[in-house]
Every structure is written in C-alpha cells, then in structure tokens.
Length: 206
Image 1 (tube, helix red, strand yellow):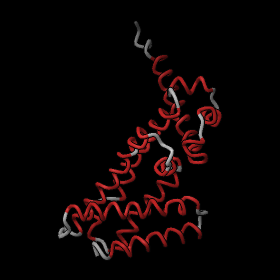
Image 2 (cartoon, helix red, strand yellow; image 1 turned 90 degrees about the vertical axis):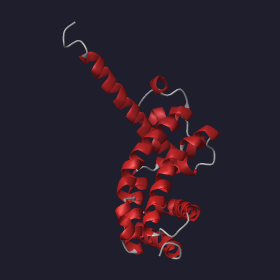
Image 3 (cartoon, helix red, strand yellow; image 1 turned 135 degrees about the vertical axis):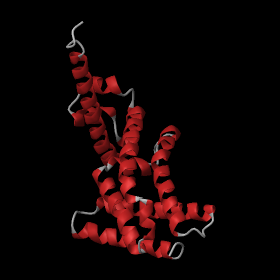
Image 4 (cartoon, helix red, strand yellow; image 1 turned 60 degrees about the horizontal axis):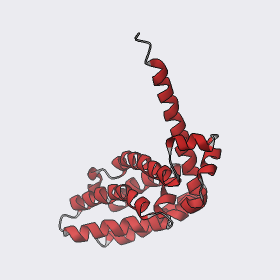
C-alpha cells in the first residue's frame, strides 16, 4: 500500500460528515417550524436537498435524528454557557450580571431555533425527554455555582431551587424572544425578560 491509499477513504468520511451536518441543520429548521410531532424525515431530507435513502444512511428514524441534534446542541451549549455562566460574574451588580448571562443565551437560542423548540416540545418520547436533560443540567449547574459564590449564605436546596425558578422564568418567556423581530421589538422583549428575572433574583441573591 502507498501512503496515498487512505485518501479516498478520508474524503468519503469528510463528505459523509458534511452531509450529516447538512441533515442536522435541516432538522433544526424543520423541528423549529413544525415541532417534533409535525416534522417528518421526508421533510428533513427535502430541506437538506437529499433523498430519504440518504438520510436513513445516517439516522434510522426521526427519534435518532432528534437525539443527534440534541447532542450537538449540548456541545454548542457548553461553549455558549462558558461565556454566559463564568463564576467571575458573581461579583457584578445584579443588572450587569443578568446582562452578561442573558445576552449570550438569547444569541444562542436565536441562532439555534431548533433547540428551544425541542426543549419545549410536549410530544417528545420519554427517551427523548431524557436526552434533553444534559442541556438543562449545564444551565442549572453553572447558575448554581454563580449563586453559591454570590450568596454563600443560601442553603444548597434553596440555591438549586432559585436556579430552577430562574431558568424556568427565562424558558417561559423564550417564545416571545424567539418570535420577536430584530431591532426594537427584540430589544423591548429582552429588557422585559431581564426586568422579570431581576425582580425575582433581587429578593434572593441581592
């Protein structure tokens, strides 16, 4: 064998990886538009400019597609949350702390619309609902660490409950954020979201 022998295999592997990413990008768009129940593998394949047979080379069904998409989001989420949930932010004034946490999260969710759609979808199977827990835990754990640094007097149970309430407040308002037009409307909705979180957190972590 020559040193050139593996190159065709590497090229096929690279093409396969690109095709998989294209299918996941298409799935993110279709899930965001139609929800998990309304989406179909045929719609995803068509959006990606591929045949259903090509899709099934990579994903056996819609559930596998959603699982792979959720795993990709978790990886991206960890990177985004590394910026948003830096424990060093704990010493900032509360308004600035909220700005530094919320702005990267909104940017991430609006750049990845399939992610909040899957997180909020009531039609996910128990297995898929379990697959989204790592994404949720990333947020809870890092927010809990900020609260531990900022309010060391809080008991662990109260601190974790505060993190859960804050996350659910944000997620509850996320449909408004996702549906807002860029510019003044998004800025207004974002400001109201931060005001609601600030009102709650000021009474707990000050």
